[in-house]
Image 1: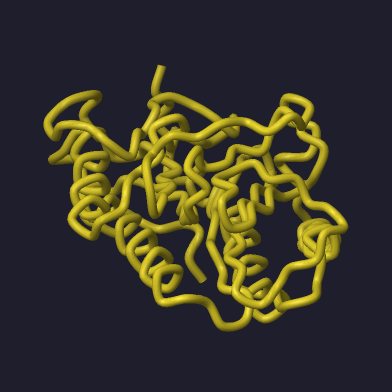
Image 2 (image 1 turned 180 degrees about the vertical axis):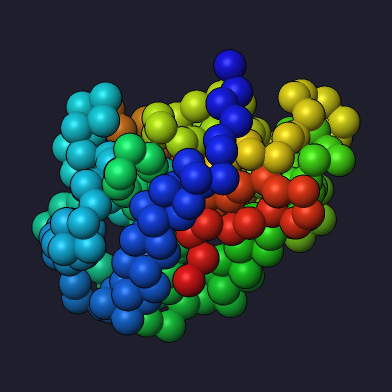
Length: 248
């Protein structure tokens, strides 16, 4: 069942999403060569708590950390560790916050120092694909109009979208209906309605779309070893353009 939120509920969600947005913005300056992903997690967790939120991912289905940190060929769900980042790495950070009964969820992929031209293009295309999808998030459209816009833009730029993981509804639960794939034919799936709240999150690979899961049971990596990037916003459907709740 797709849960339609009242304006008051969306304002509560906006508070959780504001925490997500502010911390992801702070992390742009914090991430640098030589730092460990565990240090990044500690920084983010302290920020979440100091702003009155609760780390949404910690303990969710047994996940052991407050954020996900996925490096280079890691797609999503990378677990923070003592391994240090190197110049030229790309780091995807996925961050969720629970506050006042509602969840916010967002992700960015950041360059670590100077990165390759291919990596720069990957980050640019993935973030732009997110906004191509958000542009379709209006009451005139269906869920797959978001999906199709993302896939078409990514493939036109020579990359592939990950199909094993998808976006989702969000609100009083971290994952609600509907699923929001990053691929598909337009004009299909539930019609979008004012009051729906979605986490749209393209994951894009430089090579093929295939992924596998490491022995830790969480970290998804590209099958061919290519780079991967991940951008995500939580949005609310309005009677006009979508409202991006996780944007500063």
